[in-house]
Image 1: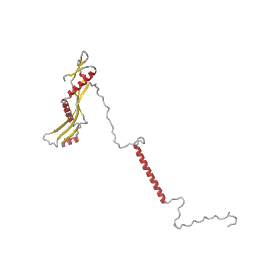
Image 2: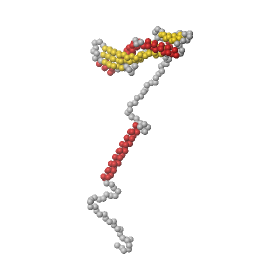
Image 3: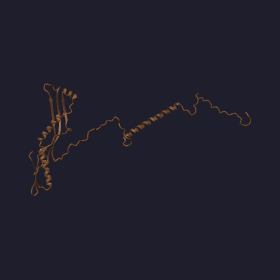
Image 4: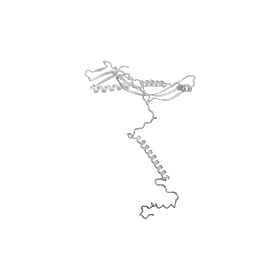
Amino acid sequence: MSGKGDVNQPTREFPEFPASTSSTEPAPAVGTEEPADAGRRGLSRGLILVLGAAALAVVVLLGTQVTGLWPSWRNPFAEETTDRSQPPLLKSIQDLSRYVAAEGNFQVVVDLESDRKYVPDFLVNERTLFVGAGSVEAYVDFSKIGEGAVKQSADGKSVEIVLPAPQLGDTNLDIEKSYVFAEKRGLLNRLGDVFANDPNRQREVYRLAEERITAAARDSGLAARAEANTRKMLEGLLRSLGYQTVTVTYAAP
């Protein structure tokens, strides 16, 4: 060692660290992490990401249920109905001069059976029980009032009117209220439907139901009810115009 100060003195060594008495393993290097801590931190990070993704999915699903929050997502497999019907075609227009004075609602049961002789019923047999509901209108056609049918008295206090006889309109079969109650068909009839299905097979029962409703309307007194209602309507109308006596009669049908 030189005696001239500390300029040429050798570098002093750092004191040694005492060796650990509890473990012989070297101390971990500075700036490194133990594997167990890194695994726990990675697992926590992954769990947070999974929970965040699940929360985002819930928010999106709820948002689609709120109008205006997100646009609705269309199901690509949803059923769609396309209406390719043609626009209505106007055939004709006519002015009506009918006064519908009464209407009758009827219901009939049609029991139609067709079979063949010497053939068992279980092979060839058709029987249909059909419940038909329909209505018939009774009206007076004012357009058929001829000249001289209306006579007014000299003093203007009374009037006489001769009207055409009431008529019955066509039977209107209500398809929504009509139905097949029971149907029995033979084996050969059912096999025939497989190869040649007839969409108009029930047309016959419809026709019979309309005929029976029309006949019932004729015998129901519907025309007489129309006469009384029309007379009552005209009497009230003409008396409101100042006539004191109103006489309404009907021509022979």
